[in-house]
Amino acid sequence: MPLPSSLTSQPAMVTIIPRHPVARSLLFNQMVNLLGEPLAATFAALADPTRRAILERLAQGDATVTELARPFPVSLPAISRQLRVLERVGLLTQEKEARVRRCYLEAGPMREAAAWLERYRRYWEGQSSPPGMSTTRVGTAPWTGWSN
Image (cartoon, rainbow, N blue to C red):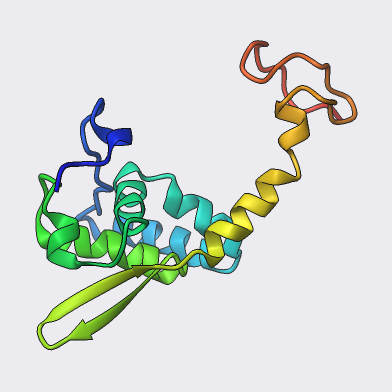
């Protein structure tokens, strides 16, 4: 199966797990910290284009780990690490059928992220601005820092 259309114009990217024990420990500690805040963990998981492509594929229906890995130029263990991140934050579930793991999309965390973003929709659609900010459309004005 080819990569989803959202990734065809850019190379597939995979999160690299550092080999040095201290660096690996720091990365793990960051993920553990995010797990205490479900919304932050969801956004962190969605930040990776490989994980987004996996979720896009699962939106079409369940798939085996091998099927999910096929379009990516990385090893099966690398994809399994990506799947574990998605599973830890609740974006997918895995079931073992004999020697095959089948993955299913779970919409709950995305629904919560979408609800959080929805509260700010009127701001980016230009209907109004948060207190202390101009009505300039997002992305057109240089960053001047948070207003206090």
